[in-house]
Amino acid sequence: MAEEYVVPKVWTWDKDNGGAFANINRPTAGAQSEVELPRGKHPFQLYSLGTPNGVKVTIMFEELLAAGFAGAEYDAWLINIGKGDQFGSGFVALNPNSKIPALLDASGPEEFRVFESGAILVHLAEKFGVFLPTAVKERAECFSWLMWQMGSAPFIGGGFGHFYNYAPIKIEYAINRYAMETKRLFDVANNRLRESRFLAGDDYTIADIAAYTWLGNLYRKEAYGDAGDFLSVDEYESVGRWIGEIDARPAVRRGRLVNSQRGIAERHSAADFDVLDPALLNG
Image 1 (cartoon, rainbow, N blue to C red):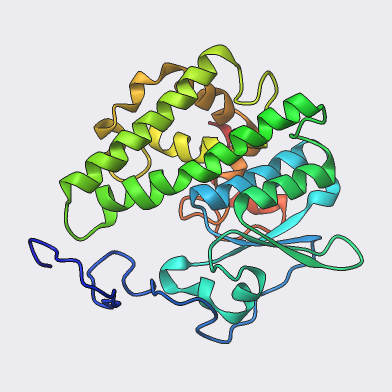
Image 2 (cartoon, rainbow, N blue to C red):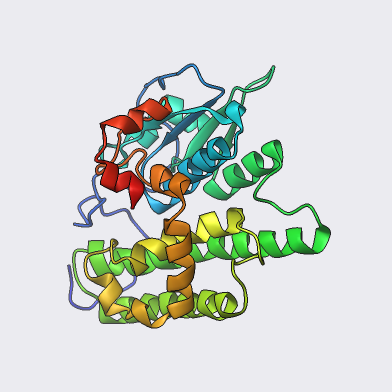
């Protein structure tokens, strides 16, 4: 890679760019192979991976089940993005953008797809009437924080996470740019949580589920190597208080273990968690 990059008049794709995802990333969309997706017996079929975006949805399902909504039973199938499973024809039919998570809602007379983690959270919250306020003002606050997270995630993952942990070379400008933005986002959340128990107010909502998966991974220093120390995340005490409260929820503990290496690759019933070390489930 040249020490000084000269921008060409027309961009061309460098297939061998050396990046961590060079073998799967490309500038085109659509299926790359004919692969049918597996189907289970439950009303919801989730195709995902235990990344922050994927875990949002498994936490939501586990919270719904914990709240007594038996109709929220789901099958969670592993999509290995490192191997390019997201480019199979079956997955692309559910999500043309080839990103996890993707959901097939087969709970009614006509099945349909839902893709993008925020859309899935809203769909499930509205379907079951929980974790989303009904009053206009409170609902608007919840949606505002949910969309804040959806708009912020690319700066943390594709920005900071990529250049700090995955890029083939360390670029000072890129790391500084996205580290600054990630810390700013932590400060936004910290300021809000200094005055409010949860992001949208006194009640736990889908806005918390969405933001928790990204901020929590960095705060617990589980993401991007030593990134948590690099970003001095311990200084955001109100974020830490909020993460600790959500960490303690049994449904959250279960949801974080689905489609993950440290948990269960697939989830088809609550009994699937029985194979795990109880310490993972009990905190």
